[in-house]
Image (cartoon, rainbow, N blue to C red):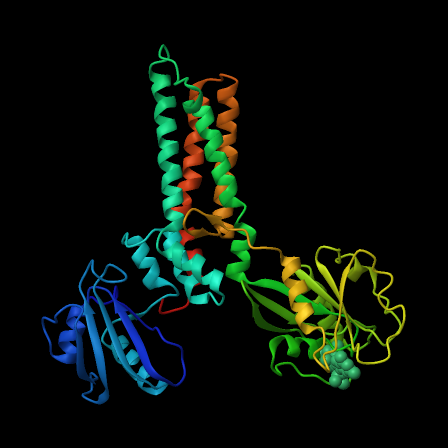
Length: 451
Ligand SMILES: Nc1nc2c(ncn2[C@@H]2O[C@H](COP(=O)(O)OP(=O)(O)O)[C@@H](O)[C@H]2O)c(=O)[nH]1
Ligand SMILES: [Mg+2]
């Protein structure tokens, strides 16, 4: 049996649940149905209720399975979906049996990658699958769902069609230079390029929001030990997730947790307190804090409002700016030390008490203000591009701009055409007209197995 092309994976999370789903994709699916369930010609997309008997003749579970024929499945290849009781032991035994029958384990994202390679969706839609699975806020969900329905693809298709039209005009001019390029004001290739550049710029400008919607806003909570950093984090999360202790230096490593303020997921790192220490483990924690801080969008610099203002080493303060740093003056339920917040002119600050909960709402709204309003591109749908799309749009923009400049100086049309072609290549990369397998493998590697 040539089943090596048929891959299988558990598509539901590991652990106990009401139901679990196993998916197979590949040419052996029909044969699997015949061999396992004794049905040689299953009705496609019909739910069968049957016993799953393994190769050794053991009963594994009563399952519901569905067979999908080629071209009319998620991947575009024949598929088999088996839902059974959500017991990890049963799921492992069914998976094991399918492997024994010659299937192989799916790679991360292989179902969706196969769907893309079979032309069931373009690359921007395939990427939206993972965005949709990870979306936890309303806007993130909307952007992902619409991208999956082709919102970005339609924009890119429109841009590439217009670019192809301009290219045809320019190339016709190369072939028949005696005929001038169209010269009505509104339709010169130059004017059309300017319109396109504006639209591309508009799309590219959504990337900050797009990256926040996909990856969350990264924030680090830093400050001296014992000022209430972990307590504030717990308040933000609304539950006790982080160890809070009166012994300074309890949070030696960093802890990451998430909370949501529509439209963003805020990924917050609780860090080791900053203080001079000889403890090597704590020192390593502080070094990690600094490393993490530099990759964060926001820093919450926390101080104890009842204590004299702390001093921070320059390798910390160098990383802080009015734009990325919010000062939290915590423990406002205690007697306030008069000058804690001076020395930070221009920085935003909020006064809180992790003990009573005072100021936590203000803290959240200030955070949201600092991230700024989401910027999406709307034409009846919501588009917020990813870092990969942004890079391609910038590349396209650069090439079209070059072409426009050459056109305005009446430089040789061949040169113009060459920049237009490069620009087209960048736009096409967004929807996946790329021949580079490594790029695709890297992209799908961030997916989960079973998707
Ligand atoms: N009075 C008062 N005590 C607080 C407040 N926030 C935290 N604490 C206490 O301060 C101590 C240190 O808190 P913790 O969150 O572990 O500080 P961290 O070292 O900065 O993470 C604990 O005993 C907390 O209960 C607050 O707003 N007011
Ligand atoms: Mg702590």
